[in-house]
Image (cartoon, rainbow, N blue to C red; front, side, top):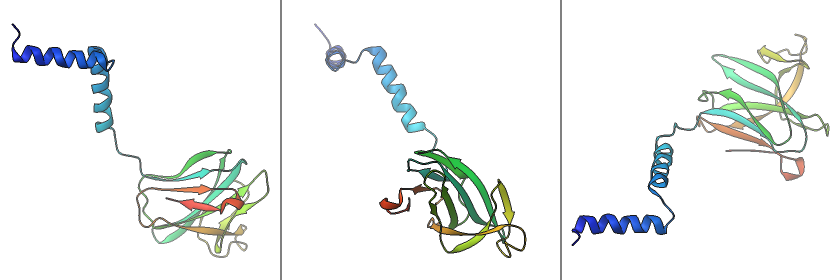
Length: 164
């Protein structure tokens, strides 16, 4: 005659087999579940995703301490993403300018900052042309003081930019 504990084990084993779980499968499932609950938190960063069918070039402007900095160029293939700022975001506002290399369009705005054609890091946003740079209009990203943000560049007919 079986004890209550033996009947419970047998019932549990029968259910596991009925559900297609072997003892090894249960161990693998337990390991997977543990991994889900102990996974490291999402990495904080500012990411930009190119949701177009074209390659785009991206420049960014941001406040660092008490001065402005612009940096570029990140070259993003069609339908890809890139981290522009690694780590937790320290500013609420970031500024983006992007160029569509294939269709010759651009994503810009009214926040004027300095750029140049080659890779750059430029301190300051004043007197761009007098300092030998181009004066370029960036669009503003308001992260709402989140520690992580994603900007999505879309085809112009889809409404431009988006963020979350």
